[in-house]
Length: 515
Image (tube, rainbow, N blue to C red; front, side, top):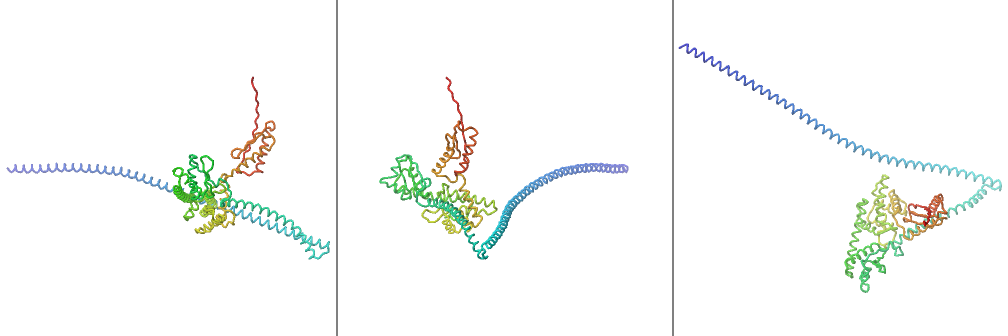
């Protein structure tokens, strides 16, 4: 029994030990498996971290490169901008330096001329004194005069000699003054013709209105002439209805009145109802439309020149210049052109173009007044600009543009120059028909005066002349000499715009009949 118990105890102990050993081995295996799994997971995490790190590193590098390129582009743009600004500054400095150098050279040249003239005058004065002294000594020896007597004799002789020089000088100056007076009188006459009701060319005093048919002439005249009297009374123009087919003529020295009458008459013709009541209504509408047009044209002039802060009354007066002409040149367009030219010249000289532009735009503002206002357009313009409190620099630039006063500022000289440029450019001012015809006739007369010329033709508005020569009298070599002689004579005897091309044509023909 005891053995059985001992055996059982031994078996239990051995079994427990075996079970414990097996459990330990199982736990060890599980632990090793867990550790291995953890190590693999750690290795995977490390590997993924390395991959993520490389990816983040590449992204950071790319982002840094992009940022660097962006910064580089910004830096290059800013550097180029700075470089351009520096280049502009350098160009302006060089331009001003050139201008300063030119002025300095001009001043130095003038100083040298003054020095030379002073030296020459000093030398001449010294020579004159020596000559006087020699002559006095000679007279004293010959006539046995005293020094005082010799001096008086010398003065009398010099006075006689100077009389001839003074007379010659007076004649020369009188001729110059006469030329200047003639030129000034022509300008005054032209201004007076535009402001006074005297004989004038039809190009600046009439407006024609086309009619659909001649039947409308009777309706425009009206019963006992009441319609035409109403039109003339309300507009202040003369309505001329003659035998010219499908046309009536509006005549007046006031271009604004002619424009009002033209608009009203065209609307009456389009409406078809022509009677005193409708005439009065249409004329009032036409006046309102012309006033709006005047305001719009004044604002256009300000916009095109960049002139700002102008009194509304001055804007309207500027717009009125649309209906004024000077030698066929529209005064408003001329004023805009003068303003822009003066501004460009001021910029080229490194000056403020604002004053030059404003003075150029207002230089003919006096021409906007009605014909019943007395005074030149310069004096009227001065009063007008003073009334609306324009700066003195603007008034100075306006009053000196015709040379009536000496320019007080550089801007005034620029306005004067721009006015001359605008008026003298080819095509700016048209010739009258009579002057144009006379010029063409003179051109053909010069060509026909040469031996061997069969016929000459002035073509292209007088810019070219074609000379047909007789082939039996003028050979090929003589053609060249003839063309040169004609060109020289035209240059000497005629005044013309631009150039005139002289073409000499020599043609030989032979004809025979075949029988």
